Length: 144
Image (tube, rainbow, N blue to C red; front, side):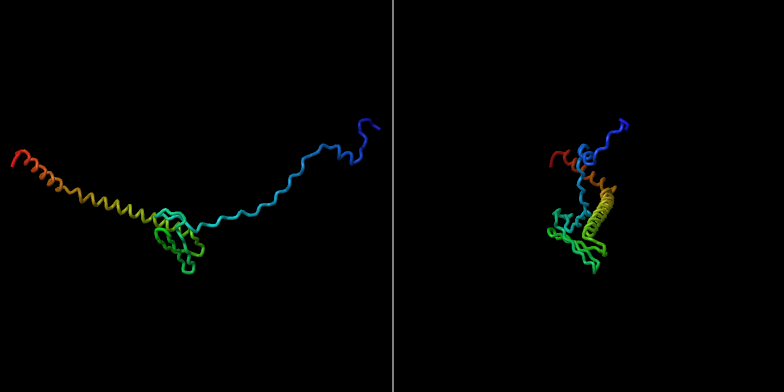
């Protein structure tokens, strides 16, 4: 026998001589699919700013979505389809309000343009200055 090979040991002795190792990690249970948050059905009113004041009712058979504010009484109605939800009616209302505001701003700008033409008449300024001159002349004579 050669002196370089150690003698064979029994199997039990070989297992107990090994250094202890860490335990195996417990397997985590698989997570289920994440639950989706339901879409909101009550919203904040654009006119009175009350939270949860807007109620929306969908009549899918008639294809109509109705929006109503419980506080200020604001109402809106729009067409819907079978895929529409309450949030779609609310977003249509926001878009309609923005369109009305833009049209009002354009009308106001047009009115300002035409009102400036009416006030800037060339003869109006000259007549007003003649009246002022007459009043000054009365003051120069200092009397009755």
